[in-house]
Length: 477
Image (tube, rainbow, N blue to C red; front, side):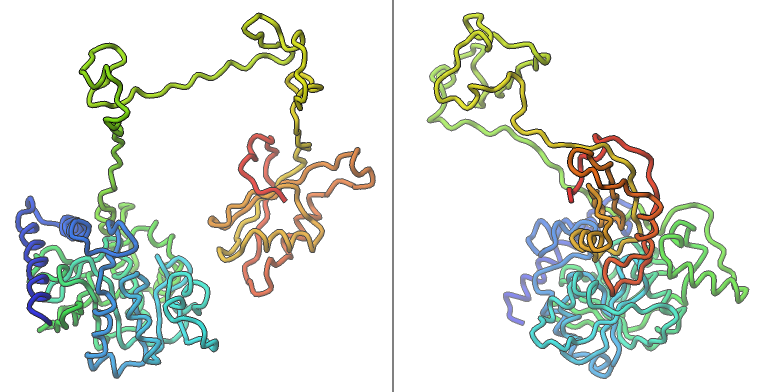
């Protein structure tokens, strides 16, 4: 490391430490996170995604920090490695695949399982960086549940702040600590598993207050930065597993993995009593400050300033600092059907002679040029349990093949639901078409697969009759 790099590293670290020492007492995890996030944004350290508030911050040089994994013997000797899905750990995920490791990535927020196993594709044209991205993990990863046997030899975590003593502060949601505890309960982790974090130099502190850390906090053994590898001198005590009394029922309900573990422990007679207060660990610390948007009036250039403004006129048309007066728009009141608006001479449209060449010459007043035929909705169905990888085009094709094509689709695929609206056939367009029966459509939908590779069974529910106004935000079929 050159002298200039060493000096820049020292300056950035000392400035951050000085800010933390000047913080109002008492110091909390959230206050340390906030200072780190502010330091990143103000000094141009952060990279995409931005802003870094509420995140494991990505930083310039994260790939250099991840490359230092090769200098650790425990990494070179391990077979199974788990790496967090955050952006700063992307380089570590790529390196693990390049070194033929069995790569495991936690499922975000543990909503659809525990881990995903990522393996090298048969297609050599696939870029590893795309494979280990959020989208690549979601599409190509194999789900690992608590019933599967796996052992993690090496664990890479993201951090917001870390001390040379091994204490680690995450983004405040508690997911990394929960993932470790669940894996420890499964036997997938033990005391011999090496834990590493890769961070920017300015995120490393000589010490952090010991009283901030609890029994559920996961410490680290190594700290990797773009400039150095720091080995913790004495290993801190690790969580033995899930501490149920710190979890609320709501948190358990949100994570199927926790529900399964709790049921398993209950059958064995273990104590899984939850806390009564419905709050999560450090929930208030999770969110950082939001960006404040300030709207400012743009100053008018001097070349466009009127003489009265330039000379300091104090009349009603003058504005301070050359700021133009806000433009106002006046809308004409819509007249009742059949009533005509007179012109300046008091003549109505019917009394004025039509102009030559006008496309509106033979037009009836207030007659719409285009009118869409809208039929009343006969019945609507809510389809739920749709996987997030399904696209609306795939649903349309599947419905067309089954002969139950709706007139309108309200797509909410990101929520796993959509709404199908069927209308009564028009006697003018097709007199032989019979109305669709609700029961027959439901029967077809319940036995239908949108894609052959999907396992989820669709759930169908008949909705109350709704008006056309309520279906304005739809995708027409």
